[in-house]
Image (cartoon, rainbow, N blue to C red; front, side, top):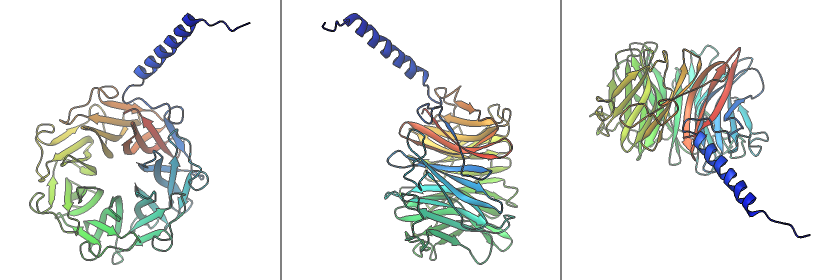
Length: 417
């Protein structure tokens, strides 16, 4: 007997499938967790041992996601790196199981990660004594398979100590084949912001500021906490105050490729901005020449935007400055990424619920009503949840951070853009 076809049933089935697909797409709104990543959009990542913290995230050209953070040990902390496939599964071509742990010193903190064009992975931060009283800049470079790259300083690791003092790295960026770290160095009893540039082999680059290190003084205790590059210029931001524990200014500097301050930016390459409180700038991004700096002032979210010449940009929030809590006390912006003209930031935690906070602003500084609930997304991981970094690529917003119940847990998530 020949099979009998029911064209009406087939058409009806197709219509139902298309309708369900349309509903699914409609329900997947901007700011929703992306359920194609790990099934529910969220991962709690272990590296063995007890406690872990996620600190930064980057996306490779092939869409694989690299997240870095700390693994707590019995005597300190180690660099911890994980690589994920686009579906959220660990990439077993990386170090055998998708995870790599690297010991540099005693208490190692990897604050930044960047992917070279050849696929090698650079992780930077600092290594400190157990009491975090004396630190040095720390860098590692991994091959694409997760192994340490022996062409980088012989063993894949670099530690830079400046005159036996307290100096560290807090963020990194690639500038061609150079690696640039933003951080700080001790000058007697005071601190200066500092920029360190390394050659591809891990040596300090003497074509940058004469010895590879540029100190920048803003008149108080100064620390650079974030770095980026745009059109060949290096941008660093951080905090300045009478002591490093009492900051009262956002600081921003623009640096030429040779390691000199760019005097076309604010006259001397440096700018300080007060928001009237305990002011800390934690991240910077440059878009169409505009310099967008995020952080906190007292217990408020804070954003400052400058023009390309280093003056406050009145097209943003009326005077170039935004300070608000939006009903979330103790929210602190930790990272920023651009989504077209939209400004996407991770705000650490919502102190009321203890849940992770993700916010999107329009170009003029208003909350973007097309993202989450009125521009704000709050995600519960089951503990005290805190986001540290954000990256946007391939129609996804990736975040990493920490969720604490009894111990720290390394978290990563993907959201619809």
